[in-house]
Length: 304
Image 1 (spheres, helix red, strand yellow):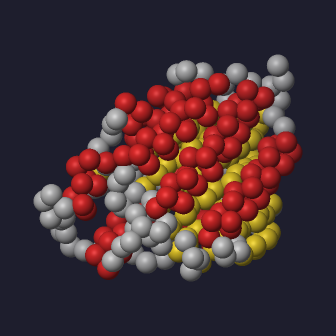
Image 2 (cartoon, rainbow, N blue to C red):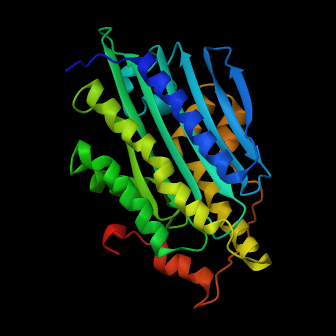
């Protein structure tokens, strides 16, 4: 089984995945995504695909990047200090979609590949990625569908992967300062290089390929649900949690900013309208309170 990394194969897959996802989202929204190709002076570049004020998606981006550098930034070398200061390259597709309708959940997905060399000049590489769902008004059918699709995508690669990656997602997308989950979770993995390059690459592709099946049916079911100012207000308040996580904890955001990435592309995940309130709490028994009591606590959604 070949174990040497093949960055060109990964890049070709990522570009195709970006195009496939954008085409599907354009068919749902009806508004074309902006295409913005960019270059990075330090090495590499990318293609940002973005829609703002869409018919369904208030703000969403599907970003491809392939960047390189002479010295590994601190955020990437944190778990591997032996690689600090080595030449590196990283590529990936990362997306965040913020629908206009409060009953349609925000979603995040990314799949990425990183490669460098160790002190002996040998290749060191790994894959990372995952997807997670952030509802404002939780729906049991949506949560179960999303998690079932993730589990089915990982099943061919080992029965232990889904429970392992689901737990990792629950732990990663957790706002420690709030002591609450960002949403209902999904799957997350990083530093993954098990079974050789081909096997690891295949697993990453399964995650990327599963995104549309996991999210598009949810978006299409919820995009026309009636709502009012109360629901929009709560959506804006909860979007604040998304901003807090991305700017304080997210490894991808920190890596992008520390490595001299393109700020506009890195921060495309920010929602367009956000509110913060001092010590606000939902009314007991309200639909808003149900998010906190019934959906944010970690649970086995496949058995729900």
